[in-house]
Length: 143
Image (cartoon, rainbow, N blue to C red; front, top):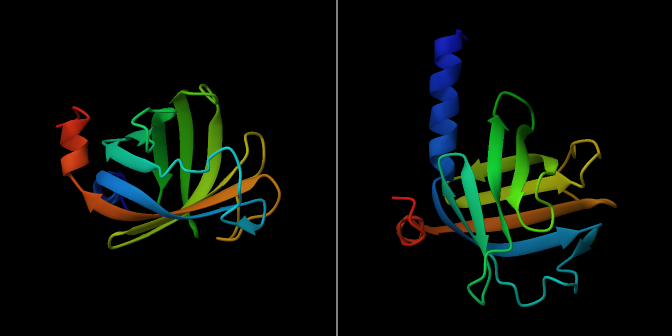
């Protein structure tokens, strides 16, 4: 693929992430739906461009940041860099699958290698999201 074709392909892939996503599944350290400090969070992620914002049930925003995609890898790769929240300044290496209105990503803790599969081991988290709408993007002032 030529460089211009790669740029267009990357733009098309980023476009698929746009909108509001409700978390419907969570796994950490090999445990599905663990009981932890995220209990009752009911996170919703909103994406505009390469910026993501995570809002939880009480309306607060504990996490915000940017992401970078590499859809040429197998599995596809995504790097999340938090710019707001407890992990501000940290980058997390992850993989993702985005088919229609379902997004799954598996991320490693900072400093760990990128996961190779959509199944967690120690220091990894897997989240499954269902697309909701572009309305949340507008409400948060992105559009």
